[in-house]
Image 1 (tube, rainbow, N blue to C red):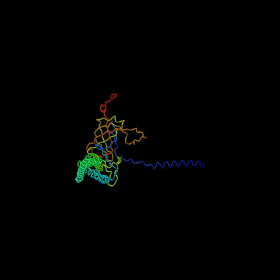
Image 2: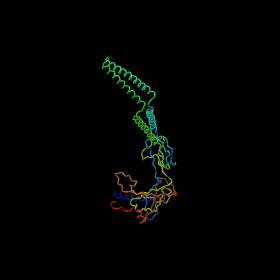
Image 3: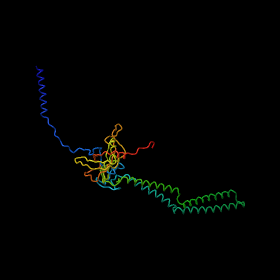
Image 4: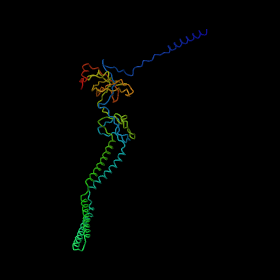
Length: 363
């Protein structure tokens, strides 16, 4: 009896639960879409993801060295011209090296000037006096030699006295030759090889100054071309990054914009040079505008959504198709902004004309 009561109560509880759930169920409200879905306007077409970019692409400005930023001359939205200063880095160490190098140049120039100043006027009189003294001593020694020879001939002397007299004459003559050589050397000035060494050393010191000036000038980063500052990621007092992962400034020409569409490799055969295309902006205000095909870049690459690691299987590749944006598309567009691109499938004859001619065997 208890078993049947338990079964009846269980069935009754189940029925009550089903009734309670059915009575309290509410249908969720039908919320309107935030924006209309992107629909391909062409009957036969290709859809691709596009990114807005300047016509000449962006220029990522990177500091030449990871140094302290001392000044930043531009801000986002500023127009820059080629050679205009963008920011400067701390160059105190190079300036100190430049001061020492310029001092060394002055020392090297002094060595060259010293060579050209030879001979010194005060060095010549003592040398000239030494020559005259040697000449006077030589005359005296020759006279003594003559007397010794005459005495020997008369028998009043001997051969040794004559030999000593001749030795004295030869010694004084050698001193005279040395004094004359010293005088001629002084009058001739500096030695040419010494000048060559001094000039070579001066040239090396000047080259070091020029090298330091170039390195110092390199710390002032300048604009490579006419552009607008699109992004600024650098401030005074911080260490500027010297790698491309974090550029200090991004420059781009906003006068002409283009769309870089990533077309799947399986759909690229449907895109021809005469294909029509429409781009649609994203966001709360969606706007369509016609774009003109500029070129198809003949290089397939992994889809950017993939990391490209060696352990990852890359099974999706895309071809970049470049479109030109009209000057007044009717919607605000910015480099880096994503848009949807719809491309009309080209006709068969257009596709054939767009394909490169087949290469000959062995070419």
